[in-house]
Image 1 (cartoon, rainbow, N blue to C red):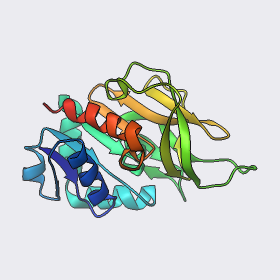
Image 2 (image 1 turned 45 degrees about the horizontal axis):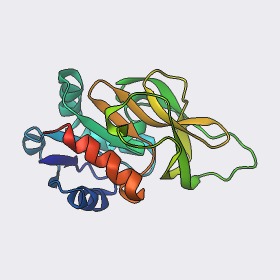
Image 3 (image 1 turned 180 degrees about the vertical axis):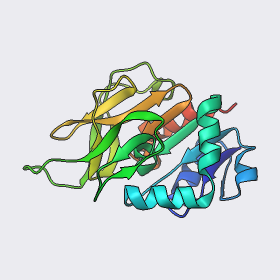
Image 4 (image 1 turned 45 degrees about the vertical axis):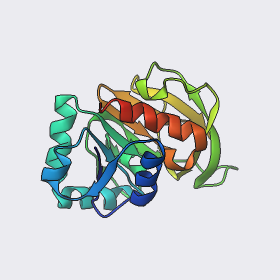
Length: 201
């Protein structure tokens, strides 16, 4: 079973339904003891970084995530869930993240491109990442975000270009993150979710 962490922020039902379409079972829960028994954990997230981190810390799930990050069990962060894996964010102030990945989340610069970045954009694959197995370079995924992680870290397995090179998929050990929404990214998203779910077997 795949545990989807319910901490009051996130597109939980859509993720659960995408997992079901991939042929796996998932459950949404805020019960730490139940989540601890899962084969893998998914950390979804929408909205503001600071609010999401505060709610995660208040939910009691932070110690579980810290333990999983250290033990090598698979965790997938989606959208703001990916951003929270980093050390900090400068979204409307400065906020501490989970600190599993080095780096920070910064706003897109003021330019001719519209912010937030909403819509389909290409994934440029640059790393050998298990959840990108079978995903072709320049495949399209669906993004919705105004802040991003720079694609200059060895943990970045794929980036997308939107005025800058923004991290689209990250991987460090058993930690994975995607800035886009795999549950909204058609066949590419389904393949990435399936690859991650296979890690829980």
